[in-house]
Length: 168
Image (cartoon, rainbow, N blue to C red; front, side):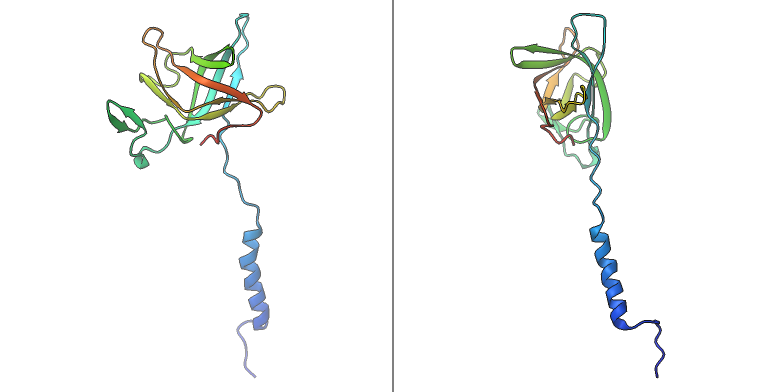
């Protein structure tokens, strides 16, 4: 009688190997973490209201970017601007609504960038208000700094009860 290296028969070994291959595929898939993009109401004693802190993640690795902003007829990469979620940014803004048109204007001059333009990707910002699912959506846009006020103004904003954009 031959002595086997394994103390069990080949069919048990086959079943064991099959289970080892199958079990990892049954594990719960880890969802990629979506950055916590939000807009936070900043309380003030002023009755004008509309003061907020915009917090969002944006930007991507420049080594893999052939250019994402058109400046002076040339595509260039700008760190911490455009699609992606590599950089955490924030800026104080005021929201204005005239009819159905909502705009956001920065109130801190260099919160987003010291450049004269800002490449804002589309973002859905959670309002976190009273447990409601409310989102302020900002469509992608390249904004120019106002030469008089030095501020940026984002246009075409709208509210929804679920995020309109995927935020990365």
